[in-house]
Length: 553
Ligand code: GLU
Image (cartoon, rainbow, N blue to C red; front, side):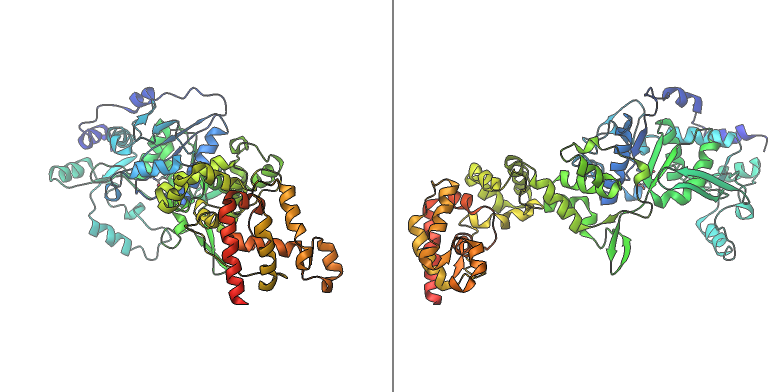
């Protein structure tokens, strides 16, 4: 067609800018050599999938590892899916794990940076300027096909390897200017399609930062660039945005990998330097011996809100995420036990191609480790924050006496081998239930050589000699001292050598006291527990246990 300019003006009468205008408005970024510019481009559905957080973290780490820029762009061109307040919900979710943008749509919903607007629905004029340019270049054309006509085309393609609007099926590809004008004058709606310069016999090659070299057939489909309402499709919008926002690395879900030939073609048609792509495989989960994608529908842990509700600290989730994000992270962690997680040299090339496997047991283990190294004050603060939102009862217990709660949480903390009882804040009510009368439930079951009869003898003696003011050695000395009078030995070795000579050993005596005081056979340090329970409560609990065993006998 000779009159492309005329056609462009017919289609876009209100567009008076050219791509040069935007090229100048959004100049190359002035960053140091090698700095990467990445982005997260969520569609505001309001649901933050663990995979979104994971991909966001990949983009964030990629930028941070190179002193680059990480920005957030909101992709809201699909107005049907739009939900009020969704952006804020998603950004808050991300920022809780440290995925905070340097630029773009910020956590409070405002926009910051000189490459905006960062919300696609505010960029209509930009897209149309580039659309007009493509029409002028003979690389795009209006298509008037109705939904029924498109359906017909699809139905006629059963035997074709390639399906879609292309070649002989692209009915509007070669309309004359006059035909187009007639349609427009008649008020027919149109979409704008790419006039794909692709060659069906040729291949497109690219190097994915995660998956390596990839070869796919060139794109030949005349995809829709602008919908009938002038709003761009994802393909068109992302090419323009990633170019004008001077993105260097597009990290995104690998459901887009099949579109790369189209995307590279779009970059070329638009005269843009191609971005680098890194396609992140979906998070997988074991299911019935097989593997499947972590599913929003089936798996509660697919929602990022799940971790908050359960009370997994962000630090734990981040630590876990890194273990499945980069295969060498755990080795690095072993060598750098106390290092800040941000010091880890994140590398796209160390990511799984087949999809990281989500494993709740592993997350739980990682989290136990992370929490075990936190000081009691931090455990208290974080779990108190959590409790205020998710567990009023725990919050109320804490509020009775914060220092007491912190002291309870401090038992067996610090030191070389801290206990690892807590994997998430929702474990805490159970963990410290016996330290509060409101939540303590007696359970007088005994283990080992401890019998109700022996328990009676031990408790009768011990309740009258224990002293919460004792230092630890004295405290243990008293327990050892009552061994012999009740027919036990303070020496476990001795017991093992001559089991028939004793009713039990010091471990059994301790178990009896522990069970009487806490209702459990396994607890953190009994010395501190007794001290914190205080003389009166400890005495009372031992008396109750005594009554129970006496009745049982
Ligand atoms: N809005 C797209 C999505 O949510 C973003 C894809 C991309 O990162 O380019 O899937």
